Length: 321
Image (cartoon, rainbow, N blue to C red; front, side, top):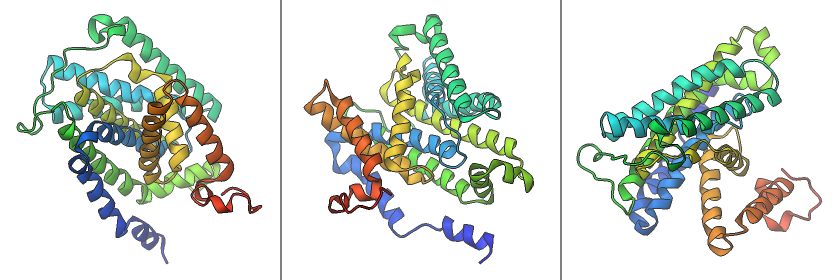
């Protein structure tokens, strides 16, 4: 079997995938009272998929991915407030803003070790946080950017308080971005990314332009995170300093730990589990929900993702998978 045939087989959609996405698109109608949480899940799932592109497929560890989420959110919110309220144009603005910032930031992650990259990405996020805080004449500072009005989607569908339109909007954008990411990772370009992830020196030795590959995928991932930020600002009508917080970056890493890296559906699954776990546990013990989420992660790592679904194998003597 040739490499081209292998890539084509991997890129082929499985029968369960269209069913899964149709079911996801039906959830705002089936669970109308939970449309707002569905919208949140779709947005953080897109954010997680964007991080998986650089963490799971190139091995770049980042604790500053919230920089792109926040930059996209503020860009879309400012555009809606001062230029035009059309959500699709604002989404494009947020995506392009995130991609441009990612292209600039990519220059900082091409050299050094994983620890260096972690500190650099974290530092850049903190810089953006402080800029958004100090430029209160533009961003609203600690009070957040208020007075953001978003026009109807496609000129017809108003964003309602129940969140149904917002949920469908975010789910469709998630699907389109997911298809793009899926096509990318199953292309020859994606194969070179995996080669870089597995052994950068060997990839360079066989002629793969490693630095340009890392720069391109980092820019694309940042654009997707910017799109998630734009969706967040548009569907809430608000942008605050919270979008730049370290917790945002840490949470999305936890989602990938839960769902699995190097598998785009891992970001989606991790987002669903994390948000539902957060919602359920916070409803029971709002003061200690972090403890229970942390305990879940410890059990997940010790037991293994597959064995966690099969409790009868926990004490079989085999290691976690």
